[in-house]
Image 1: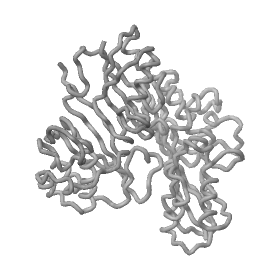
Image 2: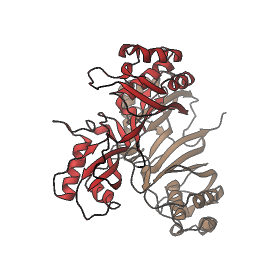
Image 3: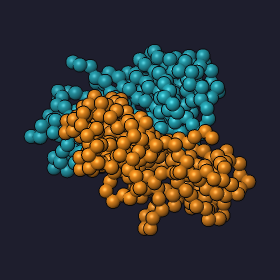
Length: 246
Length: 246
């Protein structure tokens, strides 16, 4: 049967989600845990290939396995074989044709910035420390300009090969809580490094380097050089992935 | 001259604040950083002796040193000699008789609980994961009963030797934000493990083991066995220490 796993992880000590040679990845660690639990080789298919250092609250993956362990007990059984920076939060039986990537309707990411003179040791692995004062009102205004269906080629790292660079952003908002600035973005899909480039661009807006009114023209330019830098991985978190109810 | 340091730290990898043999402490690491910067032995006097695993956003300490480095530049100079889990946030010149412990007017601590079926890998070092469902309304009601001047002997770990176990709590409140339950407490001083025992007692209230109406009689009993268990260190954070303006 096909099982859908909801997974949280602290990405600090991993070379990202996807299995690779000579580096420890989250997919690999979960496959090893499955192998220990089910005594057979299990392939884990993830919805999102998060990069090295990126975190997740609600990554989705599937495994195919026949087991007598009940779905609601499986997280406990799997977590017993996982290190404490990777946690299976739920397990659900799905139709055999369910695919975590192709059937995703939208994804929600957040990017958090700790904006103060000095770094915060309690959040150092989960927020990007940025010491220069940022104009959050300008960032809020700029964030709203990303909502819509656009060719986001200017917000895609070069070297990525995709058929289309058109994506639709449903929601994009910046909020401030004391020294923490949070970007939350939801869309039907994201290009390689797209959220981190949007975050880097919003930081440039906060610095006054980019005018919030010029976001639309940066999108239209389809030129990566017009957008801001790629913000560091550690501030990014895959919050949730949405599927249709059907 | 006497300098007041405001210090944040992730206490996870330290045996607490106070210097001891055969274990690495925060006080020791800061003294070593001072010694490197000023090329002389410096004694660091802290306001609060936080335990192993306890964190701080606003620990206060003093050092006596004559230096030509300006107070506002000193945090940068000291942080350059500190690991990234200890951060000096500010430095201020104080009168020579200023003492960080004796002159503290009040201290604010918070204790955070992550209340869900499964632990959260992103907060595992900074919140106490508790899997059983807690009645937060009952905890809120119980928390308010700690406000006042009382003999808090029932909330003091045995083996501690203090002249008086009377303390005044000015503020004690429980708040919930999604899966995070936060206790915030402010008082003129706290007995050994007092905040962690109050947190453990509030968890027992949340479980229905202790009635919120019996907090007053537990305080009156002056009997450590009447209160709940000592909650784990990792959930505790020394938020700030208040001094009079004069």
